[in-house]
Every structure is written in structure tokens, then in C-alpha cells.
Amino acid sequence: MRLFLIAAAALSLSMPLQATSLDGAWVVDLSTQPGTPYTQPMRLTLNADGTVTGSFYNSVIEAGLWKESRGRLCASFRTTDGVGPYHTAVCLTGDTASGQTWAEHRDFLFNWNATRAPVASEPGSTPGR
Picture (spheres, rainbow, N blue to C red):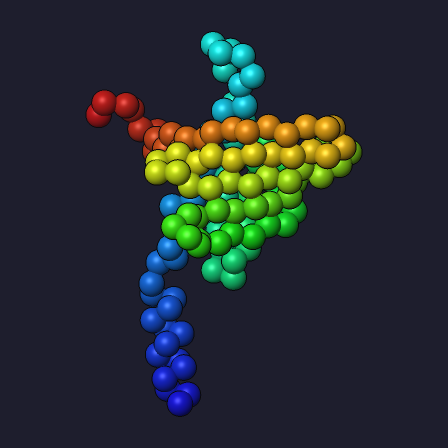
């Protein structure tokens, strides 16, 4: 039985998480006026234990969970601006992410979309070479 458990654990560690597609760096579009771009960064790490870590709007994610269910991959997490909490939910939608953020202390609910952040080029590399 012990050998079986060791083999099962090794196999589970070698298999990639289903949730890796929401992992990584995102650019969140928080624009309120057409033609006036306003974006903020979001970096998510979906951990094997179901927790979410990272940052959103330059604030550390204090607590969060993710789940893949009913054909959707979603995460919910909490950040703060130092005055009160911001509760955010985000779901993967194809190549983009759709979410909303609620700040009860500001009487504020905002729906937003996000795209993957561009991959940074290698340090010292020259584009086109």
C-alpha cells in the first residue's frame, strides 16, 4: 500500500495542473471612457492546494481560492487599499479573463477584462535578431 501511495504522489506531481492557463501575468483593462486606456497589472499563481497567490493593482493577494468546475476556471481573492477590502472574481474566457471587483467601503463594483501581459524579452537581447 505504501508503494502505491508513493507512486500515486509521484504521478500527481508529474502531471501539470489544469489551472495553469490562468496562472501568470495579466493586463487588466479598467478603462471607464472609450479611447482613454487605463490598465493595471495582475499576477496570479494558482497553487495545487486550491489557493491563489500573487497581486492585483499593485496590492498583494491576502487570501484567495481557485476552482475548475462546470467547464469554467475561476479564482476569487481579496486585496486591500489600506482602507478596506477589495473582493475580486475572475474567470478564464478563451484567451482572455473576465472579472469584477467589489469594494464595499467605496460603494463600488467594476466589471473588467484582462489580456495576457506581453512576454518580456531576454535581458540584453535585441528585437529582430
